[in-house]
Image 1 (cartoon, rainbow, N blue to C red):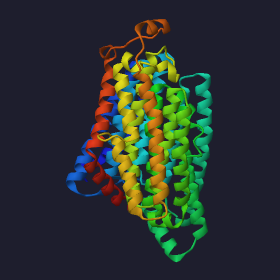
Image 2 (cartoon, helix red, strand yellow):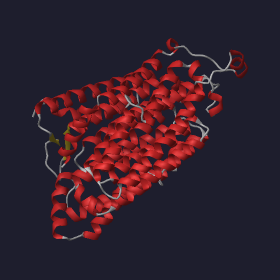
Image 3 (cartoon, rainbow, N blue to C red):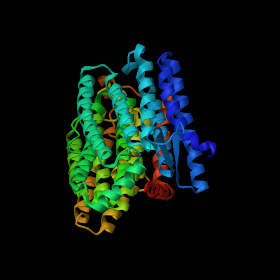
Image 4 (cartoon, rainbow, N blue to C red):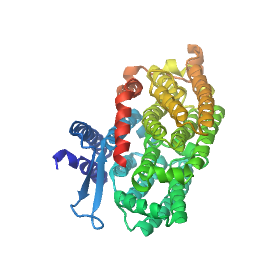
Length: 504
């Protein structure tokens, strides 16, 4: 085994140990350690991705402690896993840098190092969900992820954030409970916890026709459990407050990464545990499809009526999660490829929108109300540019990542040639129009000029790009990442396709 193949293990351990060590460090030192750990893991993941592409080995397994199941644990890494790890590290780093100057205002000085502990645990759990080949280990890190996310919401210590954290915890534990019940039933039927071994046993079970009803219940429990945790409509009630009132870095990471970790686990269950053919035969995808297209409309309509810019961006996430599940609901490989690409696009874009929205409210008397943002794009040009690019991407304007995403969904719906084609195309069109309504009206508002006298009267300030250099760099890198995803989609889509085939 080449040394580079240890990267998944090292990545998880680096982030977990960084969290442990940060508990005895000062806030400043914990921040430095967190940034160093994230950059190191990102670079290691790039090394692994290059190795996997050049060696053409597809994917490989790594035994933890070199003991086989059931005593040992197992990691499985491939092109798609390495790609997701890179994207997660980049988004987490930019989200941290973008909200760095606000953290002192949002978190008590004595608890800043706790914030970085939670971030390290969050990254470690996400990497474990990406790489693990053991379904019970996946459940353990789902819970670590939940606790870290809940802590990141509550750490701001206001009444609204405590309420949001409690609501998030209640809904998330409900989802975790359903997932655990599904895992227990799978273990009872197959006698295995490793995903690849489960798949072999399930193939035999399905061919023999035994356990048909228990298998259907198991699939339903696991899908609903992860749907609740990733905020698929109608299980989304916790989302607007959780994203809207947490610290800005927390909101950027929660909206772009946490839900994607759960969805990525669901993709692994579809391919590596149950088998996509059996998932399709179970008709669970039909239910997912209708929930998804309803969420695409419902989330967009709520975003239109919302007057708080951060809650508007949060409600937009309900619609975008609907897009991802709609791709699953199409029941085709093209649909799932579109969904995985949309996960990358949404991660890069939604975090940029939250970071940009914070910059706009800072120059508007810290008022998040829609009408208070008039002219904010001129008062903070960098934040205005970031919000403009994010909005254009979400609407689906060419050269930005969102255009590719919506094109892939349209192609997947048409190529499927099933009854889902017309509902998917119609909903995609309506949702795109609604996206344009709430994002473009906000862009027009922030670029509607007001006089300097009005700014002085309302206590508004102007911020130049060189006054917040780290924030400016983060926004510029977010914009470049979005353009890169939009103009270099072909190699990314090839990696996604190869990675999904390696899941089988």
